[in-house]
Figure 1 (tube, rainbow, N blue to C red):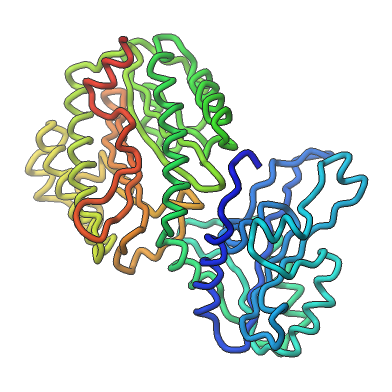
Figure 2: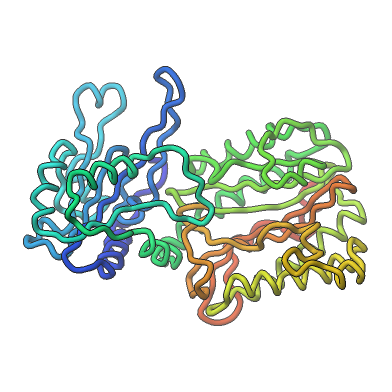
Length: 430
């Protein structure tokens, strides 16, 4: 891995929090992601399943974590199953984790090779009554590919039909949404790497540059600072491309006088950052662009103040909508009649700001978190309002990542990344 090894005590704490919520005499099992094929012998780069990483720190394919807090013997309470290195694997791919290395990473003392999994599990099933299966129930998830986890669930249900079934996901949704201090530090590191990439762009962008050239500058800066690369598919949207919310082609020329909406951020140690800035191709905003930009910035700043313990996401979004409505009236994009006649289910401001203002962030860019439950201290949220005006040929979104504090305003993990019009213009023209 490119990143520095994480202190295993983080994963020990995470497992302790999870097992404390398990039912008596229950086993929980977590599988690594597959390495996904492309064609012939080509594969996509491996990306670890975030749940097994959260609980163990193991960042290797074909790994299994088993948790059994009520096991009759101490060496059965936490078990890792790993792919064993062969001479052939060592030559062609590099050696896999040894049992000693796995302990150093995870803090788990009992480590078996993967070929022993079914034999060990058979014994543990005789001691247990319930198994926790790990399904993906994120509110944004659209699952079409059968995962390694899903194949395991089908196999297990057929093999052990007498056991009760419970869900890991509901426990993890709550646990993963509230960050330990070590996790906040890792997200901060991802934000710091993102800052380096963004500052690099401010002296690089000029008329006629291609969107993909900007992408190349970012990936260069991210990887040279120990990131695997982008935390999500980068959006580098010049001109009217910014009005396509998930524009990812990044293949157009950036023209003089246009804006570029950059929704681009680095990962670090599997933790995400999530940044959006909108900058002028020519190094100067027009008067109209500046007015809209500052309106979006005001909404972002006011929205962030509302991210406090006890806040409900639905109420928060409603209040942000009122602030945005006021700004759109000031810009002449809405008039009082539009607001008076609006559909409560799709308010007038949604014509220009059609997405949510915030989402949980952490190991996943759209991280675990139950939106119907009140916000808590040490949750990490994005704040990302936008105004999109196709008829004027530009869209503006501004986004920071913040940590909810016990008291006062949230802490901005991106507070050092240029955001004010004057600073961006100064850096682009220095």
